[in-house]
Image 1 (cartoon, rainbow, N blue to C red):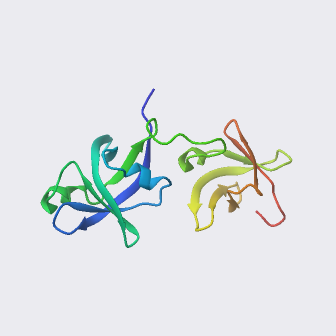
Image 2 (tube, rainbow, N blue to C red):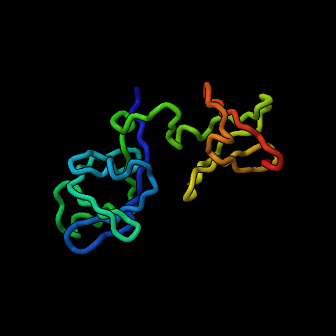
Length: 167
């Protein structure tokens, strides 16, 4: 089986001269993923290069990370602009009813009357919950990913409670 990687953040710059990198992440479980000693992956072309987390801390809406024992800015400049990934086989196991956002993209969305409404093309995150961006043949619309709207997810199919004005 081919290894599946999930993006957890993007390296947006360096911090100081001691080899720390600035990581922007909106990923769930990010603190667990950035724990000392964990292996994450930098994507370079089609290759995923393993890196070991030496330390991580949160600072002004970004994470500052040190990797692979590198302690000089000149050694880490090459990684700016790279995305950081986790191997989903070694990622935190999801509980019943939890999903990776990437797994929701591409699923068909049906209403409670089994009428096809469209396909999930993106998952947007707002402070209180996530929104599914659904594309029908006519337009795009948003569905809150909360229990009041999501009735079930079965066989790559999302069944929602459609209310008036949703689409």
